[in-house]
Image 1 (spheres, rainbow, N blue to C red):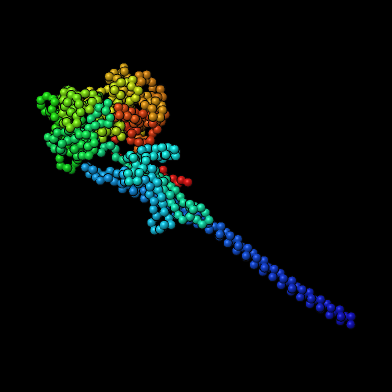
Image 2 (cartoon, rainbow, N blue to C red; image 1 turned 120 degrees about the vertical axis):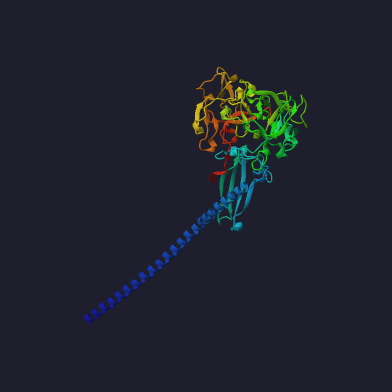
Amino acid sequence: MTTLTSTASRVLSRFRLCRSARDSEGGVAMVTTLIAILLTAMLSMLLLGIMMSQMMPTSFMRTSSQTIFAAEAGVNTVIGQIRTAEAPADFTGAVYGDRAKLPCSAEGPVDDAGASLTYTASIQYFLQDPTGRSASWIASNALACTPGSGPTADPSYALVTASGLAEGVAGMGADAGNRTVQVTYEFQITNNNIPGGLIYSFDGSITPDRFCLEAYSASVGSHVRYVPAVDCGTDDVHQLWIYDTDYQIKLASTTLPGLGVDPLCLTGPVGGSPPQRITLRVCEPKTSAARWNQLWSWEGGARWRGQRDPISSGYASTWLSSGTASGSPNGRDLWVTGSAPSNNEWGSFNPDPRVGAGAAGEDTRQIVNYLEFGRCFDVTNEDVNYSHMIVYPCKQDPIPGQPNLLWNHKWYYTEPASKVGSSGPQQISILRLNSTSARYCLVSPGTEGGYVYLTSACSSSAANQRWTRFADTGSYATSYTFVDSWGRCASLGDKFLGAFSKITTATCNSGLGQKWNAPPSTVSASLDGYQEIP
């Protein structure tokens, strides 16, 4: 009995143990399942958080990518407007820019993007390159710009600042993702070789100039008269003149190729004594001895002087004037007279620089400015002790070798070999009265905007007398300059007698007023200084 009972107890015990094991295994499975569910939920929440956290940056990046293209679209739009800001063709058939059409600002949608993606742009205009300049320089040197009138002067550079704008990014500021770019546009500029300029009367005590010369007609035998300044610039065909390399003064409208007409020149009397009226005659060839009465040499006192017959005999005692001994030239014809006053409007002139430099240049030891193309380095009033030097209409001498060219326009320096690269540091000097014992050297003031002057104490070791001449450097920005020991360029400054620019030293800016004895050429338009700004 005891044995049976013990056996049954063991069987029951085993049964209970097996059931307990089965119960334990089921509990483990349930816990595992719960843990798996929990982990899945946690991972889902984590992934959802990650996805949610990435939505804003992704949206920002997408918006930012779009707005940079919108900003560039703004730049392209502005550059297109600048390049199409053209004036009607002039009498030569050439087309130049019209600054009244230059934009001051621009805005609009990006094509195919609707109102959700737009650009705005502001345009500032400068005479000097604004690239790399400080904010204060930008603010003080930008030309005022009025919509419909454009900038206040013909610019050399435009600084375009364009922003791309989108609707914004949820959860961020309204301007989030917007981007701004800036670029400098250099205008295509033709040197002052536009055919012809006005010839004004000049009086050192009267400013502004009150009269200019006008041909009655563009035909052989026509006379020339003085007209009031208010009418000057209104008739290009009859008022623009060229002082050419052959020493002849030509009516610009008759020099154009393809018109089938012969150039007409201011011509003095063939016979008889002055005074006699000037007439327009067909310009004689450069090799013709008969051209003597069409040759005019600029000299001190702001006068044009005639030539003798034969040409080799030198200057004649005749000058261009209004034909009177005093008084206003208003309405009078242009004459050849036996006398003419210095710096007096009835016998003196102030030709616009675009009239030309005659035969002046490196070959005649003259230094011609590129902006004021008819004007050269000049010892002011032929006085080596003057406090400043000026640029003055280039003096002339039609005789080969220019033996009579006045000393105060002859400058001695070394040009780089083959006119490439640089030469110096070196001195720039003149010989007073053409005497080698009276040498004077050009001095830099060593200051921004200071006036250059002369000294007889020439010293090759003096820093203020050391200049580096740059010819063709391969970069137009640095070519055809004179640079002093402090890295400043010889430049045009304020006016002497209200008409003739003083020579200064100033920060080199690639401007035309700092270029000397440069070949007639064109500055090509270009984009530079591209950058993204905050």
